[in-house]
Image (cartoon, rainbow, N blue to C red):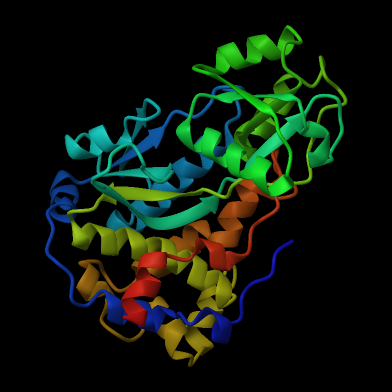
Length: 336
């Protein structure tokens, strides 16, 4: 379970969010999307340990459809474009897609051409011990295998320092190579983002029935909507979408009770969110009921999360505190 941060602790509401985007720079992506009549939503191909059931891609697809409901009132007005891992910036810069859904932070270049406009998920890196020992200290002197990724290596180095243990790290270029060394019993410890690690554990469950994830998280990278940093208008639209899902959960607005809330609530934050007052929709170039439609058809943030990562899903993942998912750029614009 997780604890929702109280409004007084958050220092952020939908009203403040509305104020923070009023003075935005004009962009062209929103106009191109509208003229085209559909959204080009990029989804990075994730580690294919279980290609038939990939919760990350399934969640990304639903977020794409939900955003399309906000833009066009029709969840089918979207084209899903699968992107090779690491190619998101190139696809965005070359106008092949309008955004990337559930992408990570881009650290491929010194000049940040893209921005994570709406963090939606924490995909913390975890370690799987094939022998079943959950204590981090048992990794001392061991060999940890992972995929070749700069963030993976950095996270493991920091983890070793914090735990005051020493281990070697072997990185492999492809998931197939990593899986091969494990099945050949050449590696007993694996480090991967937790969603991929749960799939990996499922893949090897017959060969290693005692495998357990250790009681520690290495890092907590955010996944969300990545867009071009040069288009502030599009940043505002996508950021407002992510914020609306979170705000709906905080205000206890769900797909089931939204009509009752809309007709009875006098809270300004709720009325702003549902388009009953204020000029948020106009500033975004959307109609007043865009957030209402999204919540009515897809639910609030937690409803979407539970469908893909909840206790009854194939890959249940304990949620991080909701405060970790809030848009840091909005915080900064308010505080300044």
